[in-house]
Image (tube, rainbow, N blue to C red):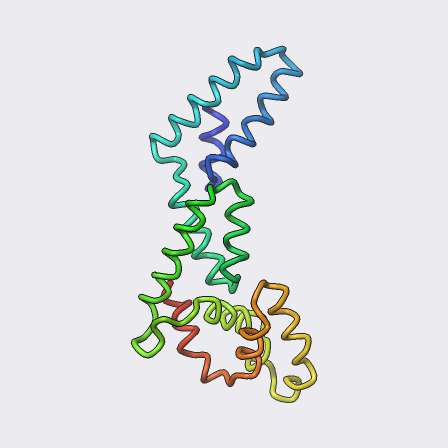
Length: 183
């Protein structure tokens, strides 16, 4: 319990992440002190349940917070889903989080922008953050176009979305950026 609370004071974590860390501690304890593996497993489960009951770990809140943060940084929805899945979040919860994120993006959009794909808004945020396409100096924009498209592709955006963002004017992207800023 001491290790779990120490870790959770410093970092937010999913149940799966905390369990993985605690399993590492159990392996060390078994090797060093000859701890009974079954007893240690039972302790770990009781600690995880206590942490969950106390609200120290909440996979739903963790997934939604991480997804919002990644969206603001300009990550594509499929990249966000893969990241959450890799962090031990269940597939159902990942799907629910993506649906919630889409809904929040729609709520943050102005009337004329509702129904806009959140991936477009995230791509605009990434372009702004990395100074790609319309956020570049005008004299560099044409010569760096292919590199900018490749940068968006590496972030998980489709060619169509990347092309629309890179070829747009900065003023055209302001409404999209307001969606991200509203999250």
